[in-house]
Amino acid sequence: MATVDQQTTVLKNYINGEWIESTSSQTQEVINPADRSVLALVPISTKEDVEQAVASAKEAFKTWRTTPSPKRARVMFEFHHLLTKEHEKLAQLIVQENGKAFKEAYGEVQRGIECVEFAAGAPTLLMGESLNNIAEEIDSEMYRYPVGVVGGITPFNFPMMVPLWMFPLAVACGNTFVLKPSERTPLLANRLAELFTQAGAPNGVLNVVHGAHDVVNGLLQHQDVKAISFVGSQPVAKYVYEEAASKGKRVQALSGAKNHHIVMPDCNLDHAVQHVLSSAYGSAGQRCMACSAVVLVGDVGDTFVQKLKQKADELTIGDGMDDEVLLTAVIREQHRAKAVQYIEKGIEEGAVLVRDGRPEMEQMSDGNFLGATVFDHVEPHMTIAKEEIFAPVLSLLRAENLDQALEYIEKSPFGNGATIYTKDAKAIRQFREEADAGMLGVNVGVPATMAFFPFSGWKNSFYGDLHVNGKDGLNFYTRKKMITTRFDF
Ligand code: NAD
Image (cartoon, rainbow, N blue to C red; front, side, top):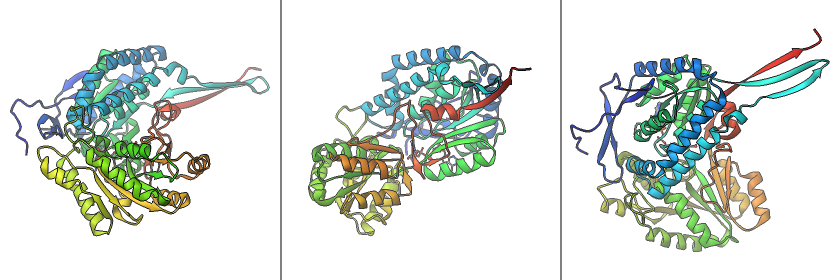
């Protein structure tokens, strides 16, 4: 257990342009996963704090909604400038609170900045549609309007990118926002709020309330919150979707994943091994687009396993600030303990443990480390094949042909991403047409989409209709109004 210094900062909420102490005295430690040092204390805020934040956002909405869109876009340009200037520092902050490697964190900041770039196109994005002469001397026009106060609830694994999937576009569309970041990685959110204000966002346009369930429920139940953007684990996503929808809100809830990578016999095997390795073990397997199951097709299996094991043996584990490191710590000790339970379950259910990450865990006990773990001959019915582990534990399945590999994907309850490694055009086409997932990669290890496309999970990986980012994001954060005008009066 880490010791807490009396001087350790208790984070404040950001409401109506001011840093305000939570009304709750309950706090949780924010821990650096690599060495378990305490970075800060995060308040577990109350519904009263949510009440204040929503009131501030509601008030700000009165003027922000009619602020000309080019003026709103200029805030995004300035925000972009500030984020770019602070790229490296933001990445360091991510490494501290999340534990991922600096290179990954740097890439995450870049992905976030790209969302701001997209939002800066608001005047063009917000253009409506019109058609003259829909009947004799009658014209029709469609205008877009903001929805109102939007609540955003985010996970620990992308403390910068996921909030930036949400509030820049929402705000550029004229909405105001209350962000509830993960209580495990709250530091980035506060810095983003500071920079957003510095960029010219008026008071109340972006508010941050730290905490856990009470804040989430406060947002879900508040009648003045008109839309909810959520990203997190599957049970919570389902709960948030059902609860928000039952209160008449729009909701997009991005959820858990089990991403399959199909390795075809004709592929460039070294390329496939390298991409599987960094997809499965980068960010300690804590990416919603991480490869967590590999389907080895035909006779490619044994060679792949041998090469993968060799590469996994060579991986450097450690602190994300060390340049050599690929495999970093998982977010909390409890999370690692859960991953160990999955390893035990895999053994119990009869999968073959090709590489065990637990000895490295024992050796590196100062942080939440777990070595690269590989199970071979995993069957689709086994727990480790079906459930999201969200740690460096990889399952290898065997399939006779592409049809069977695609069947495994179809049977998975999740459908976030899937990848195929092959040079065969026919296989690529069949994979594109039949893979039952929303974001596909062809010879690409992490086929996450860019800010101008929807982040498009399927099945239990997403609850809602309109995804985040791209035109889906625009449609989610705007309401359409139609006007039909007769001119022969
Ligand atoms: P999580 O579900 O534990 O937490 C997400 C948010 O929900 C946090 O802000 C948390 O405070 C809140 N929360 C947690 N439990 C709650 C409850 N019972 N009631 C109300 N609110 C609750 O998720 P996490 O561990 O922070 O993040 C990892 C998960 O997020 C993984 O499952 C991952 O696949 C998923 N994820 C998905 C995507 C995607 O695009 N589909 C992207 C990133 C992460």
